[in-house]
Image 1 (cartoon, rainbow, N blue to C red):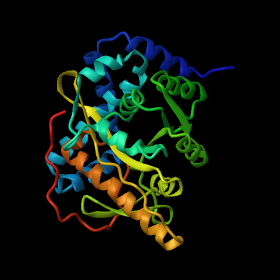
Image 2: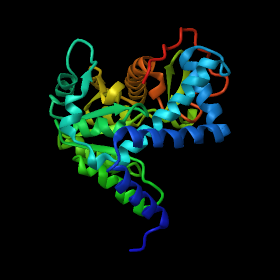
Image 3: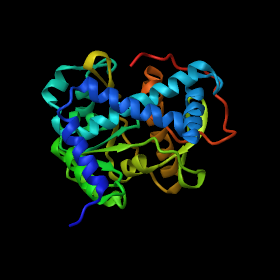
Image 4: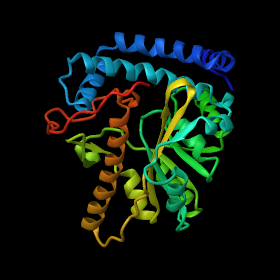
Length: 312
């Protein structure tokens, strides 16, 4: 089977990066993504618009620009994390991870979600490291994850194998619903990234940072169909090689009768997921990687105070 030159570039990069000290590879990756931010005008504008909503400031405010740039810089570290995932010692990650879950541990929330024996959906976002979050969860429950397919087949096989190396089975996003429902029936956990902006016709309306937007109904719809709980959970980078983890109480779908009740229940579940995501983005906005316009132009402006920027 032939492979592209891009595959060999990535493969070589994996080999080199895996043997490079984390601080060095993170610095190099951050330099690349920061340069991309500087040169990619449309993405820079969208990122600043998103951060303006998060911070409650005008898009051209210096603090907004700094936060947007930090987001791209941090994304380099996250991308490097996937490339080097096979080299990550998960026991060391566990020792360096701080649980910021309110009132109880993240494991207790996960156990509650799995307790009914219907599996569970773990909802996360383009925040921190969703790959590391999956690798951590997979040490405690059998886990699959819905993942985009990379356009280059060779690169796709390589990077998906990195996830499988950490006991995370991959469900391609194309035609995922049937496979997810089967996994849930087998009492497995399934991770899904929820923060993908869509059009009104294709999504469900939520309020996020005081503004209305539209997001996929998939996680909530599969929960309603299967009866499985959804637990929001996030992992992100902290200072000096440490990590933070925060999980929220699982939400359980209610029985529904008819299309109207189903739509209302999907909206209720989805709004809860985005209330939880808002909490972690407020906690560390520089680790939310949303480089597309997230709110429709002209949607309700935020009336709440913005997030405080934390160093990371």
